[in-house]
Image (cartoon, rainbow, N blue to C red; front, side, top):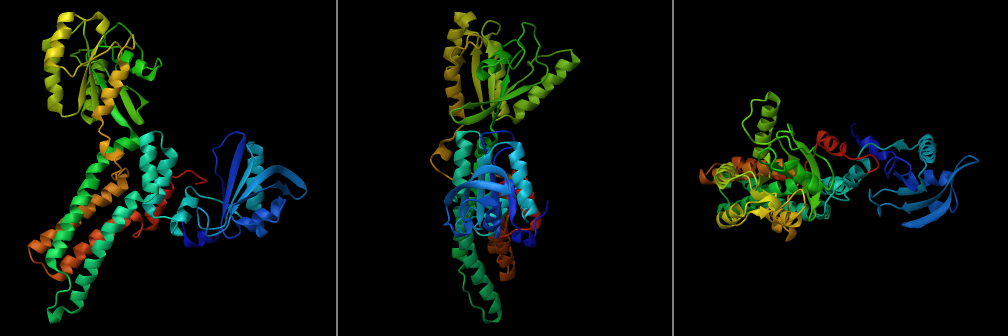
Length: 460
């Protein structure tokens, strides 16, 4: 897929609702001829004489043949999503009807839209910037409250406005430095170096905060990888099944049943958690089980959260303390989860409450105290920053550009410290402006746009 300026003159068409049989389907057209092309096949009011943002009942006909009774919504440029003439035809959801309507308008001169082409036109026509355009795709794929809020905030310009403000401050100093270069022989200073240093340091603090927010943003967008770890027969598979409320993992009294990891998702408090049931941690001579144990250890290193699960009827305090020390050294947040409370030794329970008061006592088999476990899991995933409305970076492309911006800003400070000439300072400022501009689309390439929009669904 590739985009060219000549493509922008075409009228495009696509199914905007999911494929498959449903009650209704929406077919979208955008382009200069969208209304006139639709009018040729629509029997009802003359669409070319109607006002924008109106809906009209009639039939779509191919010659004398009626294809379907429809509702047609018209949006006249520039008051539309793409800032072009847009028509949305609501038909019945029959795949036959959809195909007949699409083929009819393609014969009349429309062409099939490419993935993301409606949103791409909205960006090129100035409806919003590139970061907001990418948020459209995130909003479509949002599967939790937090990912929905993050995408909606970005689509409304929360992230973009912050980036544009940073860029506008730098542009002013860049213009002053460039002016000094024009008057190089006259030894004049239009841009105060101390003011520039103060600005760059302020920008660095903001950029650093945005970079640090990416860990949270990645969790919001992709879910929290949560490993359930412990000895064989601690009840890891039972806990996974209880959390999912389905028999996802095989449960057996035979130790070592789970030899690879099993993964599934659950929504807790508006956050998606990717729970991973792993092979039991123990020394083993079984080659296949040993591979599973090795994979468990790798998963634990890359997890955002570990549920350390142990069997109250088959574990002593010495073993628990040893495992806790190992987990603390690993540096990944973890919860101590004591399972099979219904079979517990009261002495061990009292010792745990004294030495490890943050332990959660559950019975995965009986589904006891699972709500408390979920509440504690949410506490460890710190979403306070996001819930207070602060900007959170969720896109890896934006993160990469911010990291490069930080490097360029540090180069500016280094240049000021070493009293380099104006042309080198100006070059570092231009680099910073370039990387910030990549985020919002003020600096773009055809390859960048193609890579972004080809990941959209057709019809959006």
